[in-house]
Amino acid sequence: MTKLKTTTATDFAQSAHSPELKKQFETFINELVETSLSPDALAQALSGGIDDLATVLRSLPALEGRLIELGIAAVARCNPDLKVLTQNLRLPVSQTALKLVELNDAENFRALTFDADTGGRKTYTPDFVILNERTGTAHVVDAKRSVYTYDRVRLDDLQNRMKAAGLVLPDFLYKEHRRLNVREVRVVILTADNRKTDLYAGIWHLSQLDHLVEVEGAGAAIASLQAEFHSHVKANWKQACEVFAQSCHLPIALPVQPDVDLNEMETADEDDQSIEDTNVIDASGNPQLIKLGFAQPPTRH
Image (cartoon, rainbow, N blue to C red; front, side):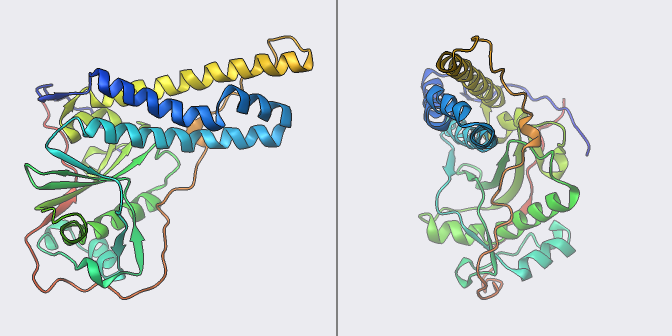
């Protein structure tokens, strides 16, 4: 996929460089790491053998993915114009909506909205909906630690479901989220891995987060959060190894930290949600002029 490098002027009114945000990040890391990745938990896994250790290692990608989601939401809330929604976002997706977005260019269905009350055969739950109340633009956001393991078919399927869900989003937010008004819906996949990005096809690297949420240093803040997470886990691992070695009367240098590429460890996503069959969504009787498309890339300089 095409990798595009863009730069934007850092003239955003809000900044991610704040003590409050740093404290939030520390809380996120502590809450996630000090459960299954605490020194005691890691030492116990070492004592339990390969199976227990493998279980712990498999939890790492999911925990880092959750951390990224928490970090993005926290950074976005630095902008007072943004309303960040993370709860009650189960959006209906019908075969009618899917066929519409699969077979047509967005220009052909920009003026359509679907009624959120009639249900749908499937649902899609985004990680966030970020609504800019000043501009009326809502971004349907799917945040991923990596899309490296996604082939083109899976990415197309995910993006089509995101766009189909976007057709009901204006009606859904108005009815289910205190009559929030949306004039334009955009979809974007945010990935922490820059090996498969395409700004113009709605797959953005986290370094472009500044532009999306209009907060200076947003992308760098998430990168720093990830680095701190890795550092914290590494320190806990080292401590666990020392405890394990002492309990077995072994040299402290054993065992060594396993070399794990988290990008190769695929975890279960909500992308493949398929809920029970219900009625197909019908087009709203009173359609509004709502624009739908991919997130718009930063202006090139």
